[in-house]
Amino acid sequence: MPRGSSPKRERQYEHIKESAERRGEPAKKAEEIAARTVNKERARAGESKTASKESLDDMSSSRRGGLHSHSGAQGPTYDQLYAEAKRRNVHGRSGMNKAQLGRALGDT
Image (cartoon, rainbow, N blue to C red; front, side, top):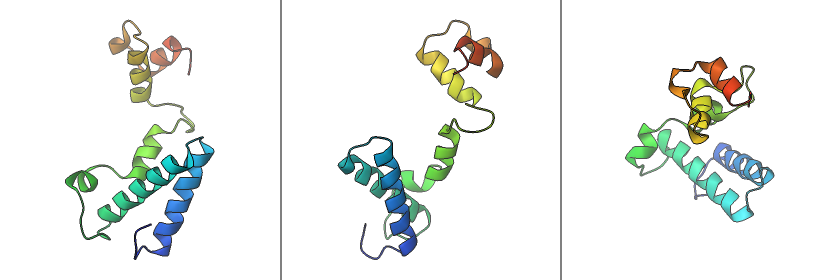
């Protein structure tokens, strides 16, 4: 963690690092993911001296994580299903709704 980090950011770093390790990331990669995420959040909150334009303009990491989560009650989003259908080259995907995409993908 950078010098001068708050206890909140230190807890956030540890939480993200542990979560990445549980997902199977190597320790070094987990540390990098945690540090980059925390530094980006610090920049967005105005807690750092410098911040890249991308850090300030991009959506927050918590929002991005929520959008990528498949654990919600409704399952994956239409955009997630469409991306998977595109990856699998499902014919006719552009005319399908969420339910149709789910069926075409085997209700992933």
